[in-house]
Length: 170
Image (tube, rainbow, N blue to C red):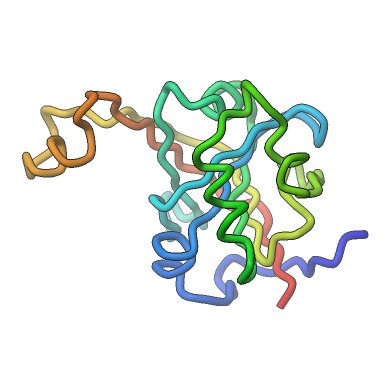
């Protein structure tokens, strides 16, 4: 049963620096609760762009989730309460090509406003893709970023999505 309350993106609880960078999030895309993939991320953000509330995330092309987010119109960012660190570690190190991460972790996929997220989350942002861009190494102004984060030269694709719905349990 859905226990979420819809809220305005401007009213989101919590510190996004902590939620994304320290607590981590799941980026999820798919066309149904039965056909989706998710991955853990600690890079991204939210704000206002083009007069819209937006969120942005980064995905490397070799990740299975990349195929889903490329194909679908919506993606979600899900944040979890304490006690889900092992689940997030699992979803960040195992591939959905080889197993059903949600099933393995006991997560319950749900559809919300065109996106796929998880019943166990405490905060969900449903985002409609509106822009993407690939990280261009020649545009990195600090050479340490390239050397430290891209030793395999596997540069991320950034996705910006309009936050079309936000749900919280608080």
